[in-house]
Image (cartoon, rainbow, N blue to C red):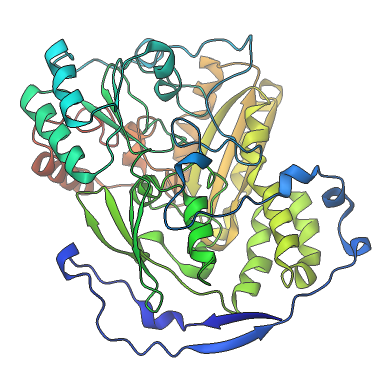
Length: 469
């Protein structure tokens, strides 16, 4: 028998508070024990496509114990297993990604350049954590979908928020631009430099600092990989309220920064609703929920959000949802859609929020508009919260194809009162289209907040805010 304990979600409403006041008050947790038998599903009842998949596709690695194990990831916090390998390294013969500054009309702001004295100061702050090797810097300079490339010559790898603070103090005094980077799985260019900004990697900030087994409150560093956090809390009979296709590489800090929706949004709500506090936007405090019987219904509803083969698989949800190994197989297929698209050529990606009743209409509209000029026009995402991932593939980047897509996609979305960014963030790509979703007053307020927190504008410049700001 598989014993699971259950806590009503209502007992864990997030509260905004500072870190010194994070100790949870006394809560009536209503702990209850529930027995769930493990279901046995005959192989003959499973879709033929699932049985034909190689075994490694569905193999789940063991979780960390006490920390997000750094040995389970590559040099920049990426996994080495085939299921979640999402690095930006390419096969031999793949064309080099053009520099962002050459492909896009962007002008470098008057920041300082890194000197030998700066490198010496950084080495004192993070001994052994200063990377200047050009070969080692190739991957962190390129975004995951290989459409943007910066020219940073320095990458820093701090371990603590104190080291981050010292780095930023030095950069502020010297007017050096800084580009924070987590797992580098973003789709909008927010995690890679545009010019020569210093890359500040959170890959070594991967520790679980504490976990409260009654309230479900976890304190962790921003560089913890989402999948490793999932294993950590599952070993303690909890479940992460967030699940993404990039979970094997993405960092929790980046998830919080973009308010990632993911595959469990309908069941557990917005990620920001689970964040109880932040320390200098580096260490994150989250709440987690124990699995409960209603989550089975979420699996059945959520699988409607994928493509036609997933809709077919949804017929089995009543059986598969009672056997974790089988729904993990289904989600493994869902999570590899983005990787499959990246192998189809250049990908134009859009992350839209639309009324559910109009969710797929833009896919048919774009197919008709582009005709044979596009290889494939694909739509998938999250039916429960109206988040559509619109992807258009072509043999190579084409300015004429981009002109046919933009601003048409954004204008179409605006007419539906949707959003040009649902969960991928704004980053470099969408900063000049925010006006389709946000009124001028909101943009002005964002600019004022940025100026208050970052008066010199050194933190991730050329991102999020419109270029005229």
